[in-house]
Image (cartoon, rainbow, N blue to C red; front, side, top):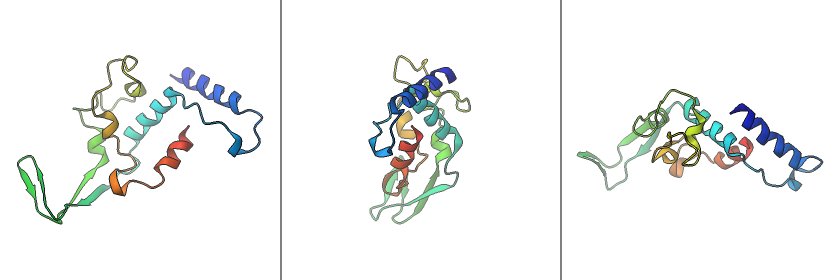
Length: 138
């Protein structure tokens, strides 16, 4: 994995060599192996270890057999999503290959993985710097 990452980064450096202004730089080639390492790091690294709160809408909320009354404050910890054994195999192993496309994922890719990564929160309270951070990653 390290060799593949180094090769991808080296290719990016060769592509942008000689450019003087950041605005002139071509879009990053976004090596897939680097993206997988970043996703796996965010999954295990717990960027936000606190409880992410939400308020139940005025209509209330039905989850299975449980009814939540209107304006109830609820919350979840990203940890529970990132370590859900029904979504992620081998929860505590650093295994970036799990994020590769089907056929290259060594059988680790599961339905719902992309949806379950909430390192930047989600919905209307998602971190406004998410896109900027993702650009800086690659």
